[in-house]
Length: 388
Ligand code: NZQ
Ligand code: ZN
Image (cartoon, rainbow, N blue to C red):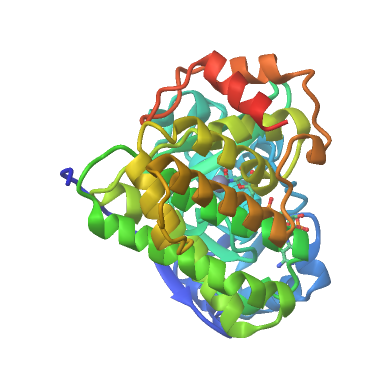
């Protein structure tokens, strides 16, 4: 097992009704709040009014930045940073899914940075710190609520880039599963694919002797598979939503990867190019690409794929070769994506072969991808072609 130095400073308040603590918790961190949210779901489901009431009860001065879009844009971040600087905002409150939380992270860091916040995506070391950031999560998916990543799109350059820095951990995240009751079925599925993909990225790596990390990952995958039907059948199943929410957080708070495990992170950068060029949901892109990447690297770490097939999907070895058993696990994964309603080919998402070469080039712009099998432009193009 590899050496590690792991610290996750985000405080988590989890559970039914805990949203009502937002006012008092924000009040401990400052007086002037920038309240960031998305395209309107929190106004429709009453969360906006509920949060506003608590902020006003604590006599906080509230500024607003609404209208954050999925695949959030740098222009919206710049707008938020300008408000923070002009009004001398003390803290950011981000209420929404990963797009809103990521916007909140970069606004909170940009508030104390003299330059343009896009710089953070070119060089993560430029992130100087941040003003306090409180999040209220409304969609189980990205893990942004307890990690140090943010992903933002620059429409001018057609880039969707991620950055990471320990300063980006939220100060506090409130995870109230009831806030996810109104997530529509397709977004629930996108979120579930995303959290599963996060586990894959940290499970299929070549590092030896990670038995505990592997079993953490397998526990997460089996739990996600077990609880997905519950939230799809009954969106207001409290325990279903609670379990899925906590799985999403644990899938990408980097415990799996940074505490002695490993990380691959190939399908994510490839998917980010798809979302940047075609503006498709992140989870949908991952469901299409991941099984093809798995096939592409199967022969490099066959033992990992046989372990996955046997432990996660409970496929008996019988007389199968490693290759056959590994492939059976991959096929089962693809079938499961299909069963829950995720697309599994680019064509299903309305994407043809026109831009595959260009997208492959964009995906490796900052260097080749991956650890298990290092992917260059040609490899990425091949995986994209296999995904058609
Ligand atoms: O904008 P509103 O009106 O709020 O609607 C949103 C949006 O349309 C809706 N929604 C969210 N909560 C809802 C709800 N609708 C009804 N009821 C609720 N309670 O869902 C839609 C999608 O929201 P979004 O925030 O875009 O989804 P998600 O959480 O999946 O975030 C995706 C973004 O995060 C990035 C992705 O690339 C993508 O840009 N990622 C961030 C990561 C991170 N920070 O660690 C890692 C991920 O791998 C990912 O790359
Ligand atoms: Zn993801």
